Length: 309
Image: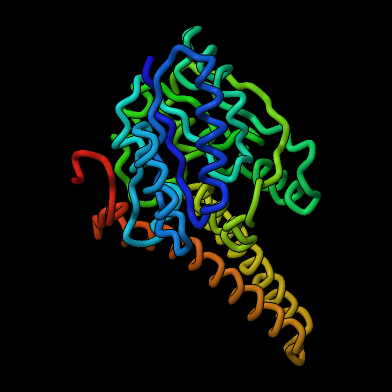
């Protein structure tokens, strides 16, 4: 079996060579052949130079360098488009995904599973990261049509059939965790301990993680729109009830001096509800806007793949 290992990266010059060495050492004890496809997502450090140097020393090293930072989702899509392996392994470049469990991924795939997912147990993860993750996965149970499991990420082995199915999903706004679940196929998981980065710092700030969570919630259902409908209907019912009670009170006791608190509360509440609903609707309209542009998911500036020479 020939394997394609896809590694998206952004400013990881200090980790590339170490990852290459570890992956190469793993395959010394395996009978399978592999290619290591690095997707340089517009890095501004010396990542590209490191990739070029490695590719000159090892023909198994392939690289694709984007003209700009198009995001990890586009990088993974690009890697799948250009892979030639019978199966594909996706992993990060910061060594938080230990190459040592690759043999186990392969073994389970050979037993018949089309997706073998490496599940991070979060045991050593910081408290600050654990809480938002728990909140997101709890919300996902009610807000997302596909089932997501905490700890399951992009680190996985997928068959060529799974990859081809994913490539048929050509939308511009992509949420890989949901896409992997949506395509289905037989699946199993293995657990590994949370690993700290080998070097450098995470490129995902708290705001990017929040944006990613919003993308996940919106990408696979219209429940937020339905929530706005229910919330708006409930609010309208309360307002009509208030108007009816106020009208009866006027008939029984006459007109009283209007209260400042009542007016301000109504204005602020209804104004906030309208802005919230418009925000949700705007998210969906924004995605329609990007999809109708039909822009490419990425632009390749340099590559050592033959089709781009």
